[in-house]
Amino acid sequence: MALKKNIKIKVLIIGGGNIAWHLVSHLSFFKRFEITIYNRTLSPKLKQLQKEFKIAIITDWKKIDTESALFFICTSDSAISGIASKIKKLKTIGLVIHTSGTIPLKDIANASKNAVVFYPLQTFTFGQSVYWPEIPVFIEASNPKAVNFLNSFAKIFSNTVVKLNSAQRLKLHLAAVIAGNFSNAMYSAAYNFTAKEIGKDYFTYLIPLIVKTAKKTRSVNPVKAQTGPAARGDKKTQKKHLQLLKKYPDLKKIYKSVSKLIEKQQKNNAKL
Image 1: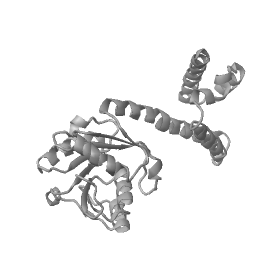
Image 2: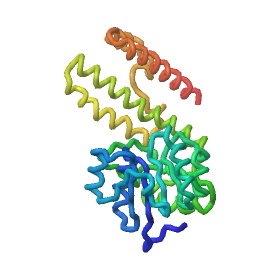
Image 3: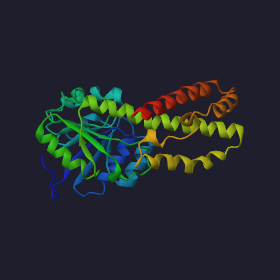
């Protein structure tokens, strides 16, 4: 399969969540794609998406076009293999694609001889645009022809397209959870702490620090960029912080644990 500009490519997106919105919003810019969404229910969000991008939405599996070239499975991870089994019964030769960071390619291999993974490493929120060229996309496919097509297709989204096998992708996903989700949990903890202890608007004063810290990782090894009391061995300040966290036992445990991690990272870095 080749990505030809003058030929309409039928795309079926299964699911109506965050990644579905982002795929639709981006592909809609290209006249070569004819997009349909399948979802069991027509939710308010899907109605909004349908109105905004003027795409077809179906809720009856029997109405799925078996001649679709691309079958995107954009459901929860737990539903992917079940959807793949349903697609298998359609006997399609189209590309069956999942977008998960954790599900191996083999879990959809029975759906089509052209089974592939299209994993964009980013956090997605329904209705909030992203700048696709900066988002790395990791791909995997069941055969060389599918790899070639997927590589071309991924490049209409991203400037960075990387081949990655299922085991490596799972490890990268773990790193993404630690860097993204865990960091955001710390933002939430800081938000709640400042709201309760100082005032509800005081978290906004931390945002320039958060942005600066994230930007530094573009040019400096995060371990070398680390600052703060744990990095400099300031036990006196850490003791004061822990006193303030007496009312927040969970956060106190995290403070101690992360401080030990930082101290260990700094010691290891000093040996290099």
